Amino acid sequence: MRASLDVSSVQKSPFLHVLFLAVGFLAIWGLPWPRGLVGVAPIGWVLSRWIVFGFSHFKRHAYEKACAEWQGKYFEFDGMQMRIECTDEEVRVAADDIFRLLGVQPGEADRRRLVMSHGAVGYRREPGVPDTFSEEAVLAYLAGRRDKQAPRLRAWLERQVFANLRARRERGLPPQ
Image (cartoon, rainbow, N blue to C red):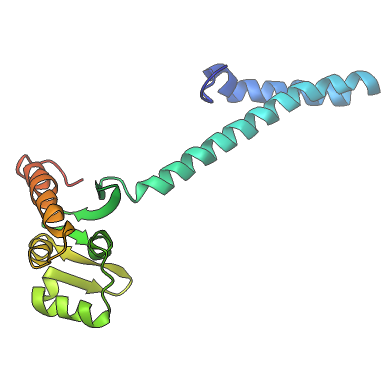
């Protein structure tokens, strides 16, 4: 039994499908009543191929759509996802992911304080877009925290994430 839905190119051939449909319909309408039912088999084969191909295409499309947003935009720290947006000019870290990893739930006043302490570029708030930290602001924020997790998270971001992203940029590779 095959593990995937890969089929030979012969079974995908539009010419073969048209031929089978033509033979099936000719048999149904051209032969007398009981013998004409022979034409159902080729029509059924073509329809079953279309159903299988359709669901295969739907599955592939759903997978690509579900994973496309995350491609190259998240990293994993202690089994939790962290979204990181990389462009040619800057690196932005999703603030909610940092708060979730630290177990913090900042209110509106706390977020305004972050904007004041790190600047509008350091802690960016835009309507309809999740809040983000700049590379420098997230490191400064984590340096000021007394949580047990904060130093580990800061070291991981500095040594593994930002260092790798800088190396990619220096080699002239596109951002992830």
